[in-house]
Image (cartoon, rainbow, N blue to C red; front, side, top):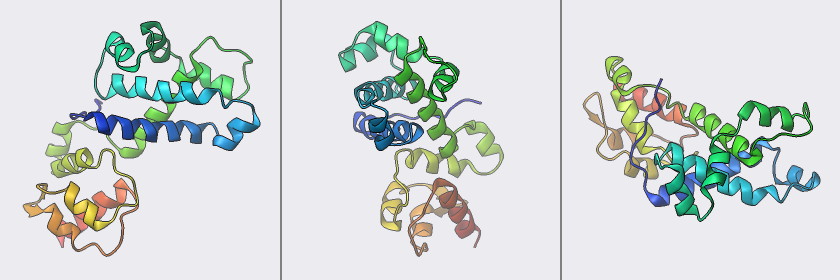
Length: 196
């Protein structure tokens, strides 16, 4: 299935890169674990790799454009983009002692795929419409860089103009009594409120 992509503003990429960087740290066991293993030197490479992956996947930039944007070599960009996730996983798990892959690139790829899976964006627009949940696509797009939990006031602003079965999403959100903890909960609550 294809990944849903919408226009991403530069400031959104910065926030997404920060989120992706944090996910990279979680995959590695946190900042403390990196310090314990003497791997703090990985931090700049992880930040760089997060931007490379996002600029390629979300903004569909070429390797040359990414290199120019970040002020790095095109070869570095290519090394990050072609890193083998499975080999990097084996290295991180101690199965192999050395890897010829760009380690930070592999970690950033793992983190990006994990974030995409958790946000549930592996579905085609036409399939959503056919299922009668096309509104969910609009909600997902509007919530693309949202931090959960999110309060109803912020939701109203983000969902302004979205309709769910002919009802304005921002009006449905007014009926929420507490912050929403996840994208799954948000979609479920909106469906419940639209039917009620």
